[in-house]
Length: 120
Image (cartoon, rainbow, N blue to C red; front, side, top):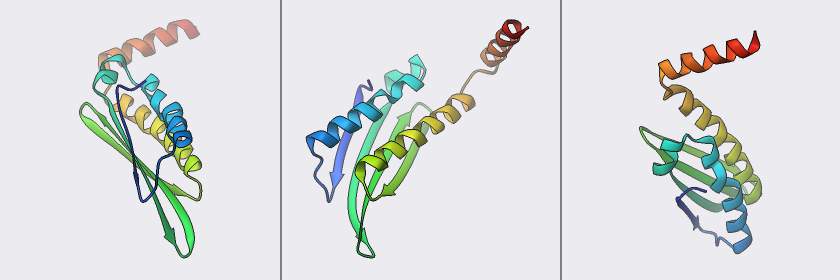
């Protein structure tokens, strides 16, 4: 579970069910981070509700502060729970990109060499 985790609502009230759901889905996003990164990771969730062309739009904005980088994701749908699910999937993809760009080249070569030995 992330140590620094904030949930706030703009023009909407964050109920207990929604808060539990967000904590369950996005609170465990730290399992995709390295041990060193977990210590300083900080996730902010902003939930917004609005109307566009007479339709209700629920937006979930997530900002993940990591060492040397910040990942920002925004998704809007008709349902707040669906927006949280989509944000979780996008966060996973962005964390993978972050890990690829911030991995030591020497360590990466070592891991690939070990994978080749196992495959042979």
